Length: 220
Image (cartoon, rainbow, N blue to C red; front, side, top):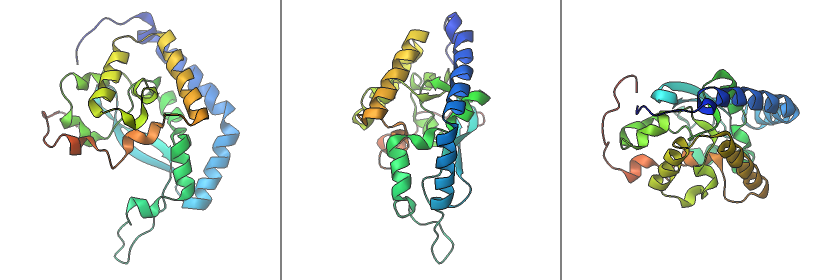
């Protein structure tokens, strides 16, 4: 990763803010989280949480937590049915409101993620990044980020990554607060933000870029 100067907030303050914000959110939202957990259990069965490996800081994989949005329905051969069959109306609403992402607050407390940062994408995408785009892994991935308030799925992959890099080049407390407030406004208004949108199977990076750009090496 490219070495660059980091201010006090990025070095120390951001982690303190993450712990305080995630801890406060978990306590404040605990009744909602409990209700959602019960509803997920009733609608989708157990486990309540869906865990998937995602690349974080320095491209190290970590288990990211979400509420499950699909059932475990299988065909006669024991194979899982297609996602669109298993996705329930309740699960679709969880995704549309980004409520399925709330368990990522646990990831923030653990130090896997930050409140604000580039969204953690699929490990399959790593070989398709340009050298500049790999910079999005210089920092912890975020629950929300600059790309998520800049155009939802209207942005191309290149534009989304450009927003990520622009954020990394100017990480400040003021910018983080602006992104958080913009995210809350858009989620409440259901206006142009959906944190889950970057997991859209219909808009995969590896389908836009047919050949890997370079090998990532290491554990990835």
